Length: 490
Image 1 (cartoon, helix red, strand yellow):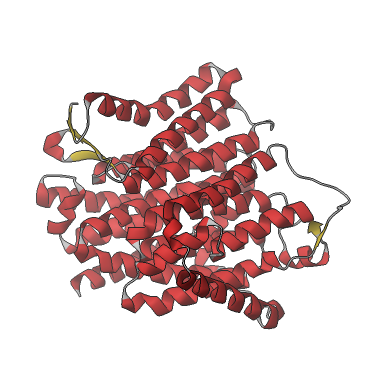
Image 2 (cartoon, rainbow, N blue to C red):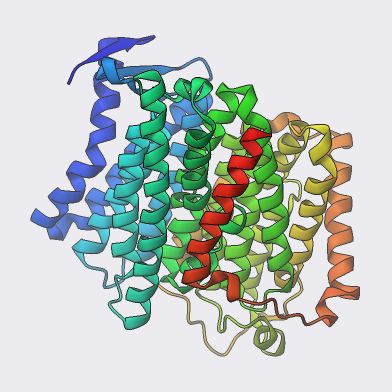
């Protein structure tokens, strides 16, 4: 294997390759040095933090590595990659800190760092086969972490995830081979000359892997049933590995942009429709993840910054939800939660709804400025639905002196990191803070809270879980493939 380095020096290229390989190498080293498992894991995450921050801040910094030139194997690290890498680094650091004083074994930290590295590999890949390999490694590492408790339930949920993921990747691989057949290259650019069926197969694989629209209905059960720190990683960063290539496709090829935007809008609406009526905190957060991923795809140009803010806030919300006295929202209404938990919950909920002073506000503003005309109404409805959904957390009763605390060790360090990141991330888009930009999100949130108090908290609708059954998930893939082929032909 050889590489040609463009737009950079030899030192930068060497460092980039070392950075890509480092998490996978350290992941195996942890087995040999189990007493240093936490230290090694957090060191890798901090290296990624520095690397991601560099590219997120410097829009002119572009690293291109050409591997196996005849096959179009190529790595591309730019500003978009930087935001996704930065998200991965902060969330991974927060999860490690959260678990620092727990009884997690070296195996846990090893798999967490391998997962971290394989997710980063997707964010720097610019060819179909590299993405495929990285996504398959993600599937294995995520399965091992989901099944880590070794209970019958966790093993079943993990195997279900692995089966759906591998089935989706089989469709994706067929599409990648068809692209190579047409172009003698696996490069993303080959999609411009690819056949309709090749694009349909690739889209099906990535939409399923990314939890988008009905092909992503495997996500709520997986994310809600995993252990708290694993749920935080899955919703915060892992799920974005399926979304990132679609964002890259949209920015590179205008002819694909409309399709990506369409699926983003329908995912935003579908996810928020379920979240509004969810009575389980973790299922609410999981369906919200489907919706927020839709926001990323609906405006690809704003996808990097939106991914950062969503990753921080959703990880924080899952960690908080895991420390509440109950997952049932009705029970939480009857038993006040500790004030300090409510404050953290309220801050995170305000950010995801787009309240000023938190980075979620800037992300919402930037997202709305990059929508096309036919998306505006749908995305405004999705934003209103988000405010309604998270009003459930805002209006939970709370007390200043609870009888018991029950907060896990390491919780506050992780929460301060994530919520502090939401404040500091405002610097990436401080231009959002104008009077005209502030009015719309504040009005949307106010309307959402009012709708919750007057209507939705009095309505109890239980949406069916039938579409989430394993046999239906596989059937939906076939229907989605037919729909994708029809869209491409149209």
